[in-house]
Length: 59
Image (cartoon, rainbow, N blue to C red; front, top):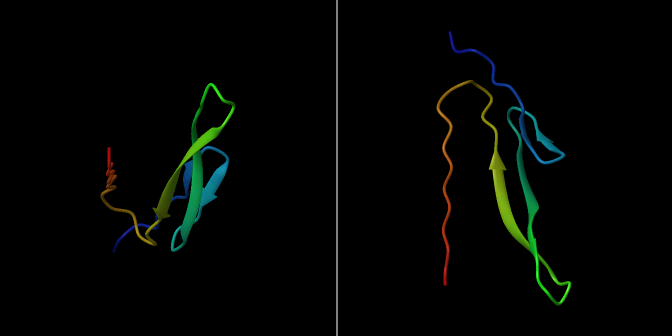
């Protein structure tokens, strides 16, 4: 039988097992005092298992 999963914590956001949450992760502040953030989609499975991180960039 599969084990229950534990919450995923990113910054001060906690995503519980079985939940999916969109967060805006602060990345940097420009010299103009403009803040840059990166959108992150966090999916926490109900059961424990492998963890995957996918990142993509357009430059």
